[in-house]
Amino acid sequence: MANYRTENPATGEVEKTFDELDRDGALAAVEKAHTAYETWRQTSPQDRAQVLRRTAELYDERADELARAIAVEMGKPMREAKGEVKLSGSIYGWYAEHGPDLLEDEELDAQGALRSVVRKEPVGVLLGVMPWNYPYYQVARFAAPNLMLGNTILLKHAGICAASSSLIEEVLRDAGLLEGGYINLFASSKLIPDVIADPRVQGVSLTGSEAAGASVAEAAGKNLTKSVLELGGSDPMVVLDAADVGTMAKVAARARLSNCGQACNSPKRMFVDDAIYDDFVDALTQEVEKAAVGDPTDEATRVGPMSSKDARDDLDEQVQDAVAKGATVRTGGKPLDRPGSFYAPTVLTDLTPKMRAWSEELFGPVAMVYRVSDADEAVRLANESSFGLSGSVWSDDPEKAAEVAARLDVGMAFVNEHGTTLPGLPFGGVKRSGYGRELSKEGMNEFVNRKLVRVAATKK
Image 1: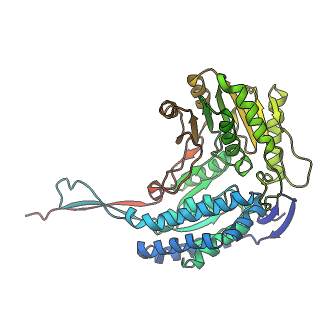
Image 2: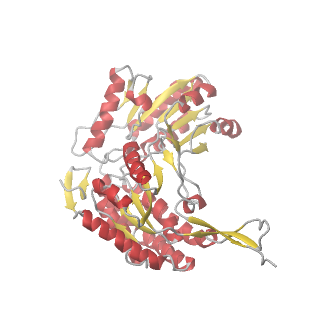
Image 3: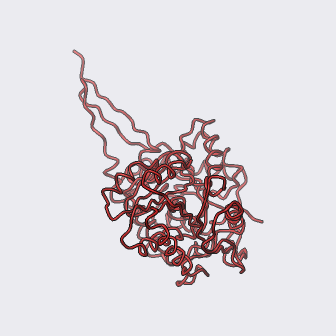
């Protein structure tokens, strides 16, 4: 089967295939991006910002087309797909608005000189290796700040996202980006080390699995190439109390089932205080059972298929392992008997450390709920994970929740919300969830030459 294709996960049918580059083609793309960089780096920040501003406008103008592409290729329900398109456009717009100011020289204490400043300059061609679960958003997090800087982009997207990846390149070109400024790299993963080894490639950013991250980090390390990794997550959601348990459960269900549970920063592990645990589990189970599962192109669908049958089967192996070792299935717990890669929205309780689900990321529509006696136990269990992307704490007393959230070993801690992502907020994790940051001003501080320029006084 072709690596680059549109395979509808709602039907299992391959609707389109795309040509794949060989090694010579991949390195030719590097040359093209490098040639473009020599021009793009000299383009004024204001002109770069204008390209990003027009990109944001085109995301809005072509929202339905862009949304439908990802609904068909990776199963995202249309209303969520439209939300992703809107968010992605806002990222390009944010950097268009704030990018020029973020590139201004930073004046330092002169320390005996006439002037000491730090200038922010681009570094060259960058490689992005992106997954399928948020085809536009994850590219925007990487591409927008780096195009604003003056870098150029090679983008190796997931094989099932060839259609949306093609649209991204088309939109950027229509927005005025010079040819070679952003190039889709439809190439096998086996060629990625060769691309990273090319001295014209000055950085690589990957969003994906731990295994993929380790492979890219190894190649980058061998070539002394800067890397940023955003990897998996098993985010804790700590519920200390709730005057309205039903509403709390509804929020939790919505967050966990978003994108069919296929989000790194989804609240996968829910730690609920004993005082409300039973009511919470009952209400959560009811909410999960009500979620409409179906064709992602149907506006009424809340939960679409998983991205592929392989992904569905991997998730089911984790669930069945937990059940065999004593976990309780409150609802769901199996694939749905229909064409495509659908999995029943699931609630698991009574989990223990001997289960794979205790330590592994469950990348699908499965909520795991743990009973805890107090905040200390919740924090201890939450921090036992090898992941550290984000986490949240919920309470009717936000100050108390904030004190608990500060104790979570994560890159992003939220109080009374989970997984909030906005252009001006930094995104990234710790531990096995990766390193580096995207979005906000931090997103422009990863692949940049922060050049010191010091002007000494004239000696007499």
